[in-house]
Amino acid sequence: MLEKHIEAGKVLKIVREEVKDLIKPGVKIIEVAEYVEKRIRELGANPAFPCNISLNYDAAHSTPKKDDTRTFREGDIVKIDIGAHIDGYIADTAFTVDLGDNNDLVDCAEEALKSAIEIVEAGITTAEIGKTIELTIKDFGFKPVVNLTGHGFMPYIAHAPPTIYNFAVEKGVKLDEGMIIAIEPFVTDGVGKVAERGETEIYSLIRAKPVRMRIERDILSEVEKYKTLPFAKRWLKKAPDVIMSKLVREKVLRAYPVLSEVKRGLVSQAEHTIIVEDGGARVIT
Ligand code: CO
Image (cartoon, rainbow, N blue to C red; front, side, top):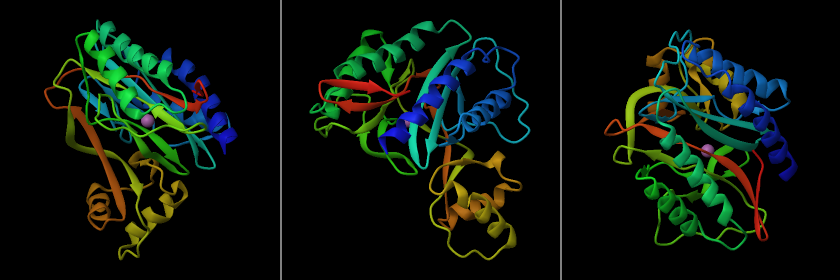
């Protein structure tokens, strides 16, 4: 089990480095997403979720739509969040590329992640991690996004307990040796909260209930292979919005709408997957 997480992490380490150089003004966003997903497969894993590319005040859950024509632009602050799995054992990592003059925001997320990883060891609580992240972020004069968190993993589930808050909480949970967690501070110059902005490109299967329409059945048979992991609408042959919404209403699919900073603050993110060890942590991404 641990070996498969570690293997998935090795794949991400390679893809992470390769993709950094691709993010430039004028480059199509979909090209980068497709490159990431293709490389994960070539290197012997599978995407654990669609490549998330969230720009500026979008914080998470943004991925290009089919035939997306948008390109990166001068001034963009670009979050890339990528996941890979082997037989359901996941690794998850993210970083931010600054195409403008928001280096501080990017450095802050990296520093917050670093300070958190530095204190992790068996026996520590998630409350201590949250406190360290919050203090580091406030030192830079920014705010943590309070409703986006790090997480644990379960087979084919990318966000499992424990929740790793990006701010000080009263009562955390204790981390034991051998636990695998993702720490992912989100930093903003806004108010520190995200909300759905009504556009959805990412879904996951809740339960394959019997559905009446042919097109619904086609979609379900197509997404079965992702089990409970998120998939992109652009991965499907045919996925009209009305049908996707119907499947969400019928509680067959879960929707992951794009999450944006509520006061249109810029957002940066950094993330690594780590194994909690006796006396320290091992970064696998
Ligand atoms: Co994550």
